[in-house]
View 1: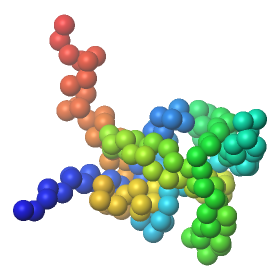
View 2: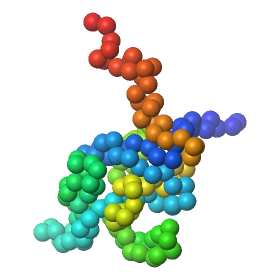
View 3: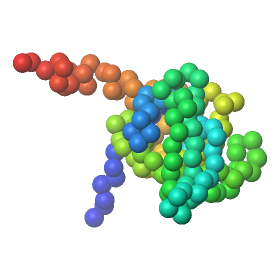
View 4: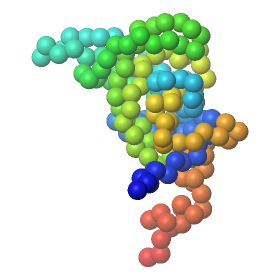
Length: 164
């Protein structure tokens, strides 16, 4: 008997995403099927010793175009340090964390490498590990999840528009 495949949602080359654990909402992300791991723009990334003897990674989220993103400091005790090859061919050691991201209504826990993306247009990159078996990418389109979220069909079912 053939298993039912989960329905894959159509997304564009750019999408708006939410990070509930990081208290970040409607952050524009670049969809990149060539990147293996997703990436999150951070600054002041450092490993620290905690008073309880554990190690943690501390980082600040920064993006000039989104004030809600600016200079929030986070601490993750569950992290990894990995060798990552950038799209420019540079090999770097990067910290990797697991966190939840919401894209097109789906909450997904996945890995994000922490990196300085200040020279790049988008603070978030969504890689193929996140995309695989969940989404189909149409590079001719953008922000399909946001358009679906704001469509009249979706809004008519929201509590603020329901009859008393």
